[in-house]
Length: 246
Image (cartoon, rainbow, N blue to C red; front, side, top):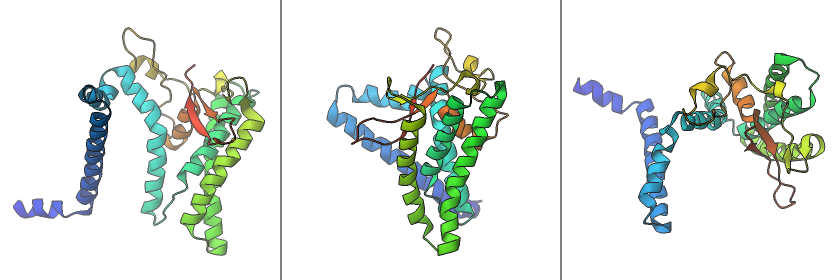
């Protein structure tokens, strides 16, 4: 029994888990020290809010899942590629390209009826993200270009390209953000708005369906009730996904 426990501690999985847990604990410790340095009287309360805020109510839990899902799925896409022997550092560029495709279809393709609209937006996001990811692969095969370098370059190309596309296609100059997607392009809630809400508050802006494929959901959940936002100032042109609850 003792020998099996020792062998478990030496496994690669345990080492990976330990490293991740240590990184989280160190990050929390540094954050607490920063809180102490900035305001020692409220540091304990602020730190407690960080630890328990996301689970203090059903609505807060829903908000955490709502905003974390696209990031989790994008991170898993990197992990999946790594298991195949590839280091995909271009996930952020692929994500933003797919997100723009979903928003564009959601805003412009209003001729699509009913559920076909949001389904098409999902497919457009997956297709655009895949096409953006193919480019570094083709460069590697055809010209032996380092995948890490080309992926990093594609991230910046994607960011600035999407900025320009948003400005020229779906930009709302009055509110300095992209236009809202049509109601028919919003994912069905499937009752999640009733699950993740407080009894005395309005439903949390949760969406999505467990019947959807998770890679597709990760793109559309970031675009539903959100907009691809961009600053109009020349010095700040980074494309981001800004939460805009309807």
